[in-house]
Length: 180
Image (cartoon, rainbow, N blue to C red):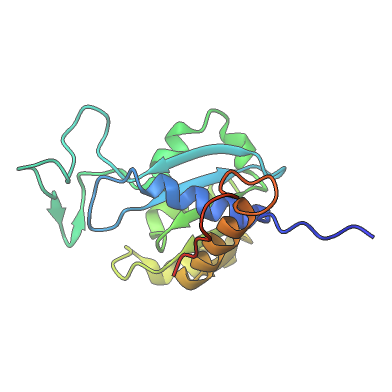
């Protein structure tokens, strides 16, 4: 009888990837990102929130936010940058999108046009534009919308560290590490 592997499942893997991409975000109102995988669970795109390349970032000294009606317009959202970075938009159909923070309606509308099977989001962002309409749009398009509480992601971090400190793991000889 085979022992069940304790490695991360695919959703957990992409949750952590999304968080790592969010570490590149350049707007401190919400450091966010999006990773997109196709129907075969292959990473096809990623993006984080930030100004377009070569332009000033919110985080740059003496720059700050470009606020209009309560929203910073200096940056592209992680979803927009992931779509811009996707070399084959047709592969999004039937795939899964993972977003850090509640996705806004304009971004979900852009994603929905490419027919992903699911949109998963980690943590809530209370200033998400058109947030109340996101559920309606996803339901209308047959897209499963799944909320992942940050506590679940912390459990995933712990699972990953435990796995990487086990047999064959690169951290097996280090003192046991636990994230919160």
